[in-house]
Amino acid sequence: CPEDAITIEERVAEEFDEAAVEQHLLWEQTGEAPPGGCAPAAVNQFERPAEKTAESPRGTVKSRLGNWPVQLALVPPTAPFLKGADLVLAADCVPFAYAGFQQDFLWDNTTLLTACPKLDDFQAHQKKLNEILKESGIKSLTVLHMEVPCCSGLVHMAKQAILASGNVLPFRDVTISIQGERKAG
Image (cartoon, rainbow, N blue to C red):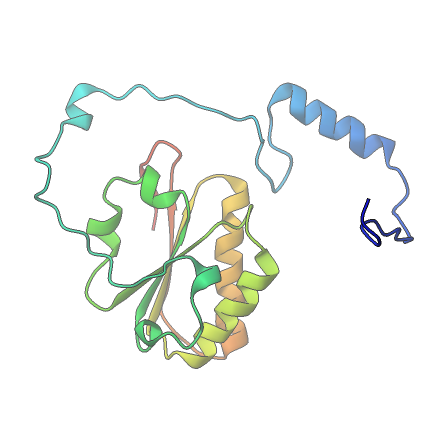
């Protein structure tokens, strides 16, 4: 084993909470989501009627994406495409679930950023979004998120960033169902 390959760290740990463990095991067994979270094993398959999945001609639709990168973690707050943009902050799952995503939400002067409030570093994203709204002269902010409870963290992040920026700007909250339907917004 190489020298200094292993270090021992001593720290204070929270006391063992047997009730919390029992509750967690119950959530795993029932597949129910814990409050404010998503059940890790909640899987669904949907039947799609033939008329709803009619194939459109391939190659006739062009992408409306106007910026790269799109991941919030990769975009510097000073990126030129943020200046004076209408910002769309979409949860990572939304473009896959909602078939009309580009058609309905990406227009001229729209900048797309994506993030996952459950899997990504929420605090780092919050800080970056705060900086973007303070520095970039964003004209409006639309948040697109899935209906699952963990995804609402993106709305919270956006509202906090607006407050921290001190800017007043149009805000829209759009909810997409897990079956790909627009529920609100």
